[in-house]
Amino acid sequence: MQTERLFERIDSIHLEGITKKYGHGFAVKDLDLEIQGGELLILIGPSGSGKTTALRMINRMIEQDAGTVTINGINTKDADPVRLRRNMGYVIQNIGLFPHMTIGENIGLVPKLEGWDKERIKERVRTLLEFVSLPPDMFMDRYPRQLSGGQQQRVGLARAMAMDPPLFLMDEPFGALDPILRKQLQKEFLKIKNEINRTIVFVTHDIEEALVLGDRIAIMNQGELVQVGPPEELIFNPANELVADIVDTQRKFKHMDTLKVKDLMSPFDEKYVLEGRTETCDAVDVMTERDLETAFVFEGERLIGQVTMVELMKCRTRSQKLSDVARPVKIFQPTDSVAFALSEMKSTGEYLAIVMNSNDPIGILISDEVLLKLI
Amino acid sequence: MVILETVLEATWEHIVLVYTTLLVSIAVSLPLAFAALYSKKIEFAVMKFANLVQAVPSFAVVAIMVPFLGIGFTPAVVAIMLRALLPIIKNTYIGLSNVDPALIDYAEGVGLSQWQIHRHIRLPNAYPAMFAGIKFAGILANSIAVLTAFIGSGGLGEIIFQGLIGYNTRTLLAGAIPAIMLAVLIDVSFTMLERKVTPGYVKE
Image (tube, rainbow over all chains, first blue to last red; front, side, top):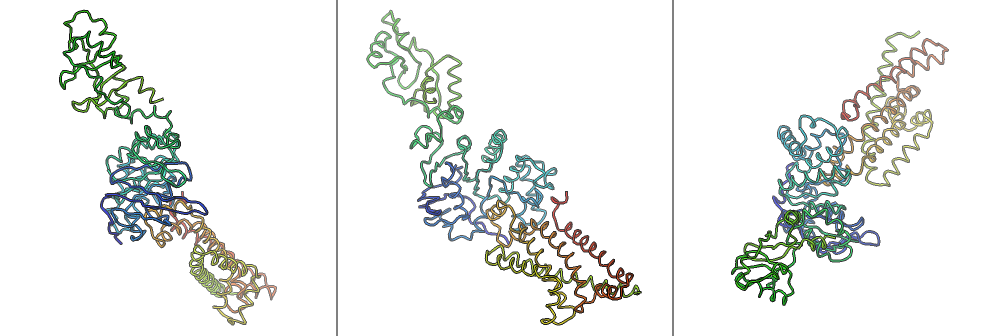
């Protein structure tokens, strides 16, 4: 009864030239997509974009008309579908809990078919229920209809984890839940995802969900892949109108916490650099020439602070050097979150900060510009 | 006046006849209902046949056995079975095919084989409809088993017909009352079986 594992972990999944015809049109057309081991890849797009079809071709619920799907180099066409699917956790929108089985039986069904003994199944069910924050003693013997939608979805998640599969396929798992519950479950799922550290392919139509959960997001339209990349890339370099529309700029505000300083900074330029030993009155000329309002003062490689044109123009004595008047400047790492950076800057009334990668200045963060980019 | 022993004997014959027929009917119906899931043609053929047999008057079905199978227990079983098949097949098929497609989809998605889906998902979900069909078939079988007394099946029909022919109300009742009680027994027995095999979600 025991099904041998096809793979213990996912190195990569390749969809190459995948095509699925549907009547006269294409459900999926010549799709090339790589899913990297350990990532959560979101498939998103308008309805009819082929995202679910693409997902279902990975476990052969739908057979492609052309192209190949390989998992760790194994062509799925060469694998027995039943065996293939036993290697994957599967979660769907309407959860699909079997109404005639208790929660325990639902979670333990596949282990049972795999020939596990009763004690082992029970043990596993308990562990999984605890993992999804449902007290086992309270829930094991209940029937699905006695559970709330959120509880059912948690059971759905636990059930998908029953065989500890290396790959999860999730088709709008939170789609049927009300928005508040969805947010809550997404948060929990994010925690679970980090804990189990598995490869996940996740279909959704909710861009917020995609931005919160996805390591990478693949945007599909009319059966074709439009763009694939990390959330920031889609937001700041949308391939076309559709992508820009889907990642709707207005929503960026809501996702400031997922954005990093490096996404919104302006590139650093040598022209911003002034030497500490430069005299203040000379600096005014230099800055005028370089068309600068603010400059950063360095001594060799070391950042000392910032000077502004307004302050420097008050220069009186020749002996005053930039190192004497430079004010401290906020320094951020490129990986700091934008939300954190903006609140830091706001607290001291700064509108400008420098972004340093260890000792190298790589960018400038301008609060007004950040907002402009966000709007 | 009939003696108690005769009534008991006839009742026993009646029970054996009805339950044998029901078991055979279930055994024939289940594979046909499952087969109907796989092909529209089979579904069409099975349903048409069952409907057709249902349309023939019970007494004619009983009578038509004689030229083909003669008289006795077996032709009686076949005659009753022909009438009992429809409700069982139809209800079982409806039960099997009305399972939420999402459940089947999910079951396939986690790697259940077709057989496992039938065994663990479709069948348990079909139980309520299936048992409703069996109970109805049981009532039908019980009443037709009275008629098959004409072709030598034995059972309570013999006593009832004796009573009818002789205008003997007491004899008639001695056959009719156990037959009515049997109808109740059949219903109760299958309800109990249903309770046993149907999972808790229906009971509550």
